Length: 158
Image (cartoon, helix red, strand yellow):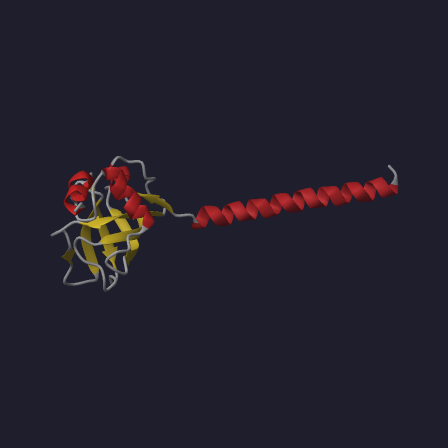
């Protein structure tokens, strides 16, 4: 083989293997850091992968918050007004966390169907709703306070 061709072949092979290695490393990094969003209906129907890190969003069910006196464990239910899922969180909750509040929790679903959250985010003002939570509520046909969208819009017209 001509030395010039041999040098080109080595360069092309080096570039191909280098690009393949970079793509492989990027895919591994993305797979570890990707958080897919699921609403409570999807989680209760088993669409969410068990054990995988996901985000779940919805409204905190009124009267569902139960705090453990001996630890920082908090149990509550999350709903999109079609289905509710139990959530367990150990840690300090955001100041804006309360019943009837829109939240997004990050964690995983265990074998018992309980969402084990390791992070809970609450909305920051009265008008803001996380886009994923708003989409889930829109699909359920409910407003943030649980009313049907149709009856809510009829009340709001002047």
